Image (cartoon, rainbow, N blue to C red; front, top):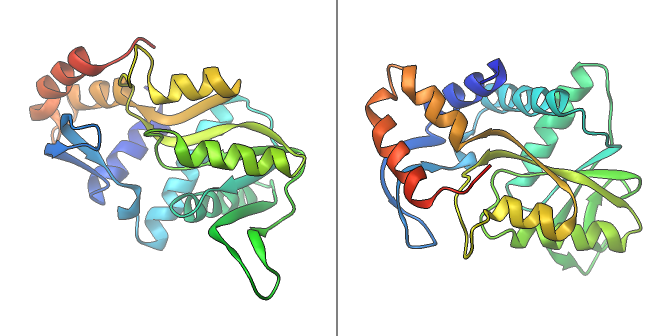
Length: 214
């Protein structure tokens, strides 16, 4: 596990974005952990998170020209990443969308820079992939190319079949999907972290029951 993944998981625990316990997911599954990027609710937390996203990009060597944040959680996440990249000497355009088209003023569903070139979508997690697929359509309808998708956490669990939502999206859309960390990283982290080690066996059992192949 790389240092930015450890830093991300520690940050998520400290801010309550990552919690252990008993949680019922939309799928109906009972999960021993839950992730909510909305808990990164301070400037310092978002700044650190933006750096973790930027480190994940550096580790991937993914080429892109601009960022896109799907409404709603993707908006502050993509913004935090844009600021982190600017501090590293790379100033990239940023755009995001409204849930509903605006009927007055400038109108439309898109805000920010014009969608063009290779666009990297930035979000928190991929559950069913619905919001991401809507973003793919917006970007392609604008004449731009989707460079890939960057998320904070990949749960690495099966959907309706043997593949995860991330794997299905990568297969169906023909794009790269990168995660700052995944369930495998969380398992490695919980094996030695004093605050998480008590949850390791339940996490391992959950992956064995619902996990998919890498």
